[in-house]
Amino acid sequence: MVAGGCCSGNGKDPKPGAGSRKTEAAYDGMFGALQAEKIPHVKAGSPKEEYTFGAQIPGVYCTFHGESRAKQSVAITQIVYSEKMTKAQAVALSVMMKYKPSEKAEKSQASVLEAFYDESTLTLISEVRTSSSASQAVAQRAAGVPYDEECVAAMFYDVAQAIHDLHRHKLLQANLSFEGLLGEHKAPDGAKPDADKTVISVQIPTFGLNTLGGTKPQDAAKAVHHKGACAPEILLDATNSVQPTEETDAWNLGVLLHVMLVGYPPLQEEEKEAKEQMEGLRGGAKFPIADHYWRDICPDARDLVEGLLNVDPTKRLTVKQAIDDQWISRPGGTGVADMKETRSKLIEMSSATAE
Image 1 (tube, helix red, strand yellow):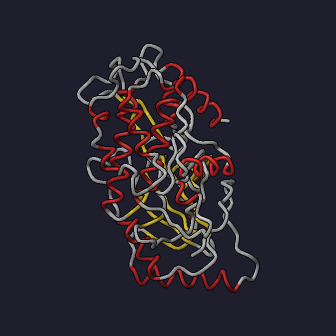
Image 2 (spheres, rainbow, N blue to C red):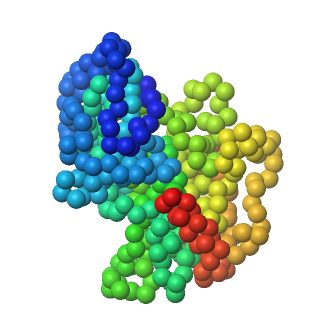
Image 3 (tube, rainbow, N blue to C red):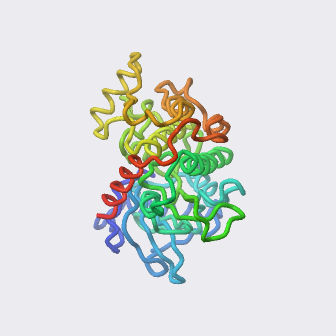
């Protein structure tokens, strides 16, 4: 099945080409494959009778805020297809539909509740806790409550655990950005709800529709080019054949941590400039760390970022190594108590996302 353009989120179902035999064949092929695989919670038709669509979630492949008739918050991912779903792709979709996060990952990784399909679109409905973004949660943090490395380490750890859990089930995140994370304030475990120091609990609203080994129900390895988050092995691939791997998820984690710590992405946002920087890094150039912004960040955090952002995927830190990194258990070091400049940048990000 080949992915087409994203739906517009304007409340209208995508329409196939008039009289398109190819689209009809795609629908018939998908219907047969899904029936043969007996995937639970997958039904023919449109989700519009059961869910309302909201704004698109930035930095996530074709995913929208939504709400069920019971007023439950959901994330809605839509994929427009133009060719038949193969049996292998139906099996891959089955893995995704059956996935349930482990105890360590369940608070940060959404699972798919159900899926809908029609003549042109596959729609996945994921359960989420909130419709607020992580950047909005940072912006809403009380003035006296610091945004510090301990706060960042807790958010990063939860996301890394969620991605590691996907890998254990032969699934990939494939697209991840700070803009795409949902977030809310919660009291630390065991503390009263009105505790002075709340934590920011984050959630990934969906996961990339890719499975390890290249079996996937859509071809969207390069669908989201957000601020250097596309790993160099994919972005610099002239053949357009390299697919996401566990190593590309680790690169995305490095980009995420970089943004959380200093408030801006590690590489240029434009694809051309990002490619030039990646080529330079492959040639031995020093990673572009701006000392002005990193001077108050502890060396352990900086080492973790650089380890995850190694342009050579064979030398890149793994997701498991990131989870076990010493900075996770002892964040801050000599770092400042409140990263006010980073907080300001993330608040600007929140304002830009809301527009």
